[in-house]
Amino acid sequence: MSESEPSLIRPDMLEIVGRPYRRQVSYPVGASDIRRWAAAVYFPAAPPERYTDPRAERDLVAPLDFNPFAWGSAEVAGTGVEIDLDASYRSSGAMEHFLGVTPPELKRALNGGVSADYTGVPIRPGDIITSASAVSGYSQRTGRLGPMLMTDVATTWTNQDGAEVKTQRMTLIRY
Amino acid sequence: MTDTAVRQDVAQYAEGAPVPGFTRPAGLEAWNRYAAVNDEFVGIHMDDEAGKAAGYPGAIGMGNLIWGWLHCMVDEWVGEHGRLAHLECRFRAPALKGDEVVCGGVVTARETAADGTATLTVDVWADRSTGDRLVSGTARVTLNA
Image (cartoon, chains in turn yellow, blue):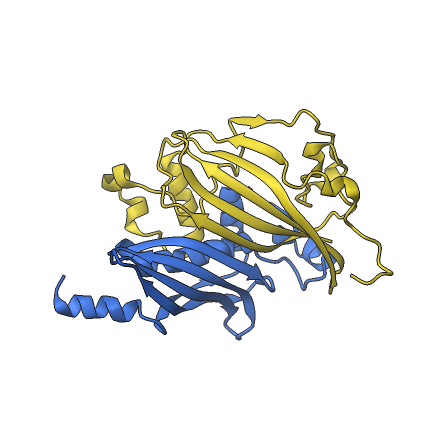
């Protein structure tokens, strides 16, 4: 960032770094949820038999990239300090409002990068997954799309037995 | 496992071994299916005008879907021999309608622990069939003893 460019990172944004902003509990994972996910990511080929064979249902395991929260959560634990977010931010991926902070005036977003550490604990039908997320850092640079704010978010999933399934880190680029 | 099978296994996962490619067509047929399971009905993935407004020739594909394709590629390659322990990637450019996205990889390191388990470090990528790199990353795979 050059000295002439205004900072996109405000002091109140820095204060929320490391503070959990969202805890979600999934509905029980369904076998059909897993099969539909596999069908979508393998399209146009059919998914492997281990996803489609009804005789293998006892051994059915979700793909590692499966998202049990995509269409909603059974429970969302608030922070108690949330503020309303204008609908125009819907596609921005903003999360600051969950901790009472107004998001930066950036309403477009791209996925800048992602990493995941998998523990080997699988997700099976019937599992209930809890997800907890926090901003782990902000940075800023100027690119082809103009000034861009990079927001690093770390999310940890655990299952109903308290076993950690994965930790995923994502860099959200807002511009 | 026979001696021949053991040799095939070692060669398949040796340093320098390629990961069999995983190729998928980009476009609304794939993106709509992925949006339907991941609730990712975002304008730039659905609507050419929204894509153009964001500076692209039209609608663009989801980074998450390429992330999924990389998982498929590694999963098909490793199978019952082990598991994917870590994957990271950077999204350099989005897929566009009509692109054929070719995911690939190569083993860059193999370390074997005293208990016989092996850890592979694997460079992975997703390219357009024209050669443009869309995604680059690294995977870590643990092979069973």
